[in-house]
Image (cartoon, rainbow, N blue to C red; front, side):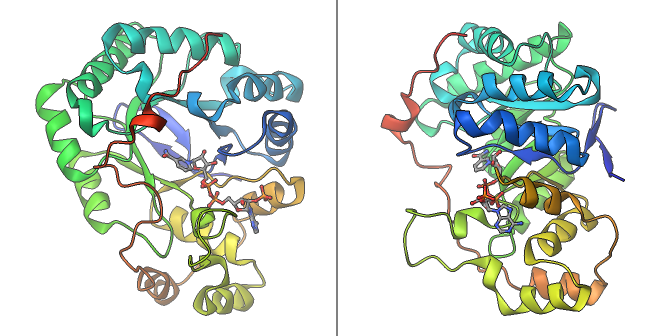
Length: 295
Ligand code: NAP
């Protein structure tokens, strides 16, 4: 069982995918294999995660054909600019060991060099025209970034991948995406950024929220499964990360129950309106400068 979403250019994408941010390279091959064995057909990686090579190895080791798996990766900021982003595709291809991408997105707007962000997006348009990618998009774009992008470019992004979990639902971003026919894809869909270690002790772990725990108990499911179901029922794509085979499988075991409207509303009402991840309007020169190695 799965749910397919149709992007604004007609390409279909499995709504639920495996994320691999902070999956150590040595764990990533096995995680991808576990996911494909459990039924996932969508993997989300990024040049900046340093594990595209292992994603490709996992795909090949799985025995699942390339054309059956939706592969999404991201261009890092240090590769923004027209020629640089065309070359970022070569780097990604070399590491993944594939000859096309299903979805290629800009990792985030670069507020200190938005002209290069636009140039990078124009390179994505060229890659799309050339058949080297099946769809293009963005990540961490706020409505004003989208507005600036749309006036300067020709192709509306298919996807905007943003921080989105019950404690931070970004209704303004979801509305702007919907207005332009852009699919909202949730990163940290089960709230990883509210609890992963070393990111600040004052964070409140959405996984332990009593309302979510209660809904999970009512369905005999886990809080993670409830959050994934909440995304899917509201038409979003979600890409939960795990390197644990049992949790990878459990996160995909979400097609045998349904949340009621009241339950969806209870989860919506948990929004605190406070971002946990980096502010897309703030430049991070050191992080932006990270060099993405050649393949
Ligand atoms: P997440 O998927 O919401 O949560 C991941 C965390 O939850 C990990 O610590 C994982 O640990 C744990 N976990 C997974 N399944 C669980 C379960 N069933 N029960 C309890 N704990 C569970 O957070 P995320 O990794 O931040 O986001 C998901 C993906 O979104 C990333 O991997 C990446 O692909 C993408 N992302 C994109 C951006 C961006 O800027 N575009 C930023 C962040 C993330 P174990 O591995 O030990 O299971």
